[in-house]
Image (cartoon, rainbow, N blue to C red; front, side, top):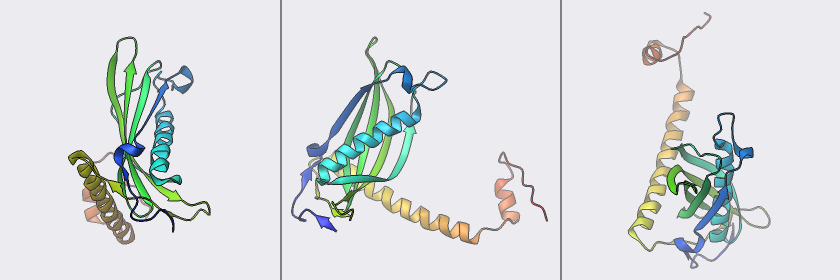
Length: 190
């Protein structure tokens, strides 16, 4: 890996980024609401800017966690995406994103989305690049850093458990009982 010295560091505020965009009719789905994919694309952009500024390198998206669509976004809303670095590893950066939509005519603001994007810094040669440490200056920064680390460990644990589950999976009486009250019909040919 290439990149900055381990002694370098940036505060959370150094790379905090807000992207604001007017939601136009071209972004709408058939129901008249803004496409979730449009919002995801904007989230990816703001995550890139935030992570790249912290890293001082090009960054790529490697995963998106916990995209929660809490409320619809309307055509005409002014959407603001607020991003901050929550966690850094050796080459990875977790960016927390909060999305709010403002109806400029009524001055109402609603929290519409929350998500976490994991980005990886790349050097000019496309190798992973070492990122600067994150300087935590508040209890909130420490909570977010620790929370991101917990999500990472839980994700790793769940991935391992699901890999075991898939490897050992059989359709037996336990599986049938597990699915008994679900909206599915099992039709296996013997």
